[in-house]
Image 1 (cartoon, one colour):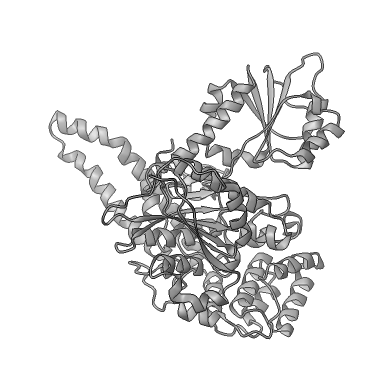
Image 2 (cartoon, rainbow, N blue to C red):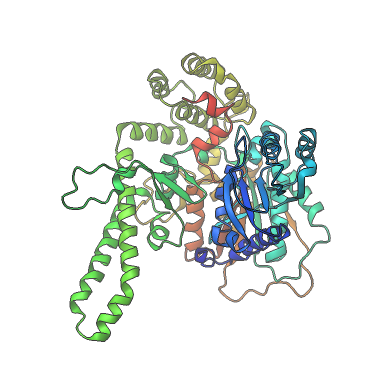
Amino acid sequence: MASHLFCGRVNLNILREAARKDLREFLDKCSGSKAIVWDEYLTGPFGLIAQYSLLKEHEVEKMFTLKGGRIPSAAVKNIVFFVRPRLELMDIIAENVASEDKLKPREFHILFVPRRSLLCEQRLKEKGVLNSFTNIDEYILDLIPYDGDLLSMESESSFRVRQSLNECYLENDQTSLYHAAKGLMTLQALYGTIPQIFAFHVANMMLRMKREFAGSHTQILPVFDTLLLLDRNVDLLTPLATQLTYEGLIDEIYGITNGYVKLPPEKFAQKKQGEGGKDLPTEPKKLQLNSAEELYAEIRDKNFNAVGAALSKKAKIISAAFEERHNAKTVGEIKQFVSQLPHMQAARGSLANHTSIAELIKDITISEDFFDSLTVEQEFMTGVDTDKVSTYIEDCIAQKDPLIKILRLVCMQSVCNNGLKQKVLDYYKKEILQTYGYKHILTLKNLEKVGLLKPQSTMRNNYPTIRKTLKLWMEDANEQNPNDISYVYSGYAPLSVRLTQVLARPGWRSIEEVLKILPGPHFEERQQVPTGLHKKRQPGENRTTLVFFLGGVTYAEIAALRFLSHMEDSGTEYIIATTKLINGTSWIKSLMDNPEENLP
């Protein structure tokens, strides 16, 4: 089931197996038949760790979603709550327990994910149900393997996605840094001490890690050579830009959640002869997206403009493979063709799905609205008209386009101009509040607090210097056969990935002047590796670097890092870890005040 976790330079299935082992041990503490009551948010992340078959092996007979009232009837000995440490969830659990049939007593257990909470236990005590629980434990689900080169913590909060950026800068809350440090401890326990650490704008995390790792060196030959910690605050621009890779556009338009996407069903309806008038399906088409699917692994990181040719080429290969059946004459040849049939049929099904997805995306990317918005983004990124009110943004507000689209563009203009002139900023704020409602005043405040939206200070705009020195804009980026990471945004090279690229070769000392004008300090630490465990690299062997994005990473940045890994002269392979997989919409939404209530 997790074959895609073995395929990279680092076997991430080891991490998954460690998480499964801890889960099995907890379930076995609750002896006898069980029903799990799930905090709905956790079902997706847990689905990446363990399928129902594993739970069934450990006597889980029923599963329910946590909701008020009575738990549905189930002839089981144990009721196990899998929940995040949230006070509002404790109120629901207390209601569940209090309404339990006293004549048929069952044992109750709570598993807090990712941390046990004394405040939550106090709330259960106040509600008079704390003593009803046989086991109260925690399940440390920090870094979840998503693919052969990708780990995510999928951190979140009640009103906003919890990331280092908005926790540490918006709410001055260091919890996510603690979880990230603990996740790195788990990683080093399984894969060995990482000898060299580079960090940018995360001094607090570095200090915390030094305390956490003190005296905890593992007797394992290090798998990673280098750890690069990048705070999202160093590169605020990249997540605001529209991703132009296949996977990035799927996420931008439909949203990828825990490795799955839900798509409009019409394109996937199987039309048979004589069934032209049959009702089309109404349920969204749910597809899993990871490198276990051969075609998806091949096209996901391509610029969308190169996907059509790749699908056409694949269609010809599959068609030719099916034609081979006419050449099969002997029993042996027929047997060989039949043995290949399941793989060929799966490939044909995969091609049909991705052709349909590409058609859905193309319907949007060829629209005038998409083109106009992208043109304005690219103008901002190249420094065109960033110091005055954008007529395009004015028109979008007048037409009441989605608020998040407006906020992304205004924030991008602000970031590219090192803040907006006061009269420009005031004008945008007035227009937004008058058009979308004064309830969004707190959202605008949040965006200002984290530096996405701000008045221009007396300091000069450093972005043009950064853009020029690091070659963040490449004219005539080759989308079909790329030779630079800028293909992922059709011209813009993500600052975060360019910094990663320069670190590997020729090194950050070559860009000292630029580093001085980027937010926060940058520094290097060396961790002591136990004697005898120093890695001996073979001639021509690549280094392995773990790039940890604190505050989220986009699929386009991931594609750019994969591109660097596959470059012939790269010398480095990258594994990506993050607090959250994000796009511009989810990122801005995470900074909004009560987004679910305030968005139409």
